[in-house]
Amino acid sequence: MSEENLPDLEGRVIAIYVAGAPPVIQNGVVLEHASFVRQGGRLFVIGRTPEYSAHNLEWSIKLQSGVPWDAVLHYMIFDSYEDYITRCRSWNPSWWKRLFGY
Image (tube, rainbow, N blue to C red; front, side):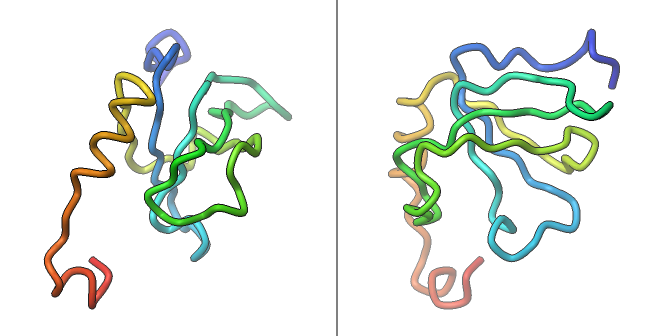
């Protein structure tokens, strides 16, 4: 994907799933105030971990974070922080999914 065709992240929240992710981020990385930045010759999407996290990662709240764009397998863009929170809170997995973690 050329840099001219990058998604518009202004005012939105992005959830990113990374190839070969370590266990701590296998459920994805969520960033607010995200933007694209070139660092060390690579394109990164950087932003801040939102206060509300569906993955219970309180230790990372409001920390600056970045993901190399060439490692992204899948991403979802939420219209706003409120849209992200609403969708997270509406997710109600069955007891089977909660038990087995999928």
